[in-house]
Amino acid sequence: MIELGVNIDHVATVRQARLTYEPDPVWAAVEAHLGGADGITVHLREDRRHIQDEDVRRLRELTHIKLNLEMAATEEMIGIACGVKPEMAMLVPEGRHEITTEGGLDVVSQEAKLRNAITPLAAAGIKVSVFIDAELRQVEAAARIGAVVCEIHTGPYAHAFHSKGRDPESPAVVRELDKLKQAGEAVRGLGMRFNAGHALNYFNVEPVARLVGVRELHIGHAIVSRAVFIGMREAVREMKRLIVEAARSLQQ
Image (tube, rainbow, N blue to C red; front, side):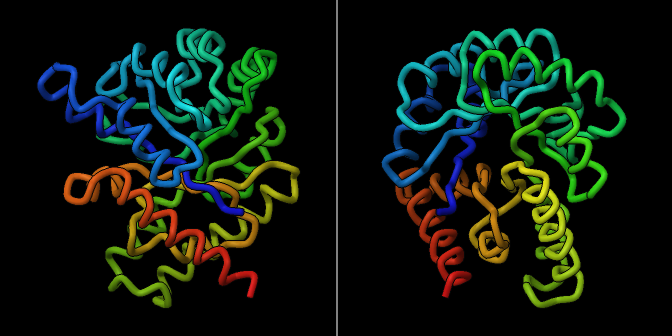
């Protein structure tokens, strides 16, 4: 069954705009759980622009679903992850000047560094995921360094969907979906879990949810945005329904 991981970073973004105590990301995580989320994702950035160390600690203690910690492959973050022990740690690229993650991790160019990062995480019992572009060479490199999960970057697909008429049958969108499909097949063929995420929303998520073998979709900004108007629980419930129904249609 396909699962939904809800990224709550931007609940913390709103809080940090005033450097206050609300809205509370942990409260958002509980509401997401009640709406049907299977996991919670947060990105503890090196500059702490939204999620803070205390948020991660409280999420680990107070939530009852899986915690996925997005992180750069730095000594500091590895130490934090090994202390907190989330169910999954996802290694992502990180730039101080980017608004959000702009592309997949280049595993090919830094295999030794990333292998060394994975070793202590795996030893701590943490599943390690890598966030990569839909490229065969990146998938193969992920397998070589010991990742057990690949989250395929859906940003190019989402951009094509938005800019090419919001039509899942347009040639540009079909091309991007085919790249995701081929990457997913390669991930599964190498014995890793196929996850996907980035820039997915209520209008473009269903074709991705129908991809064969996709296990989890990680979605944040769209859900938090809708939650402003209808509440986190209902926003998560709507997204979960969309992805589950899309995945079921594949089996019929």
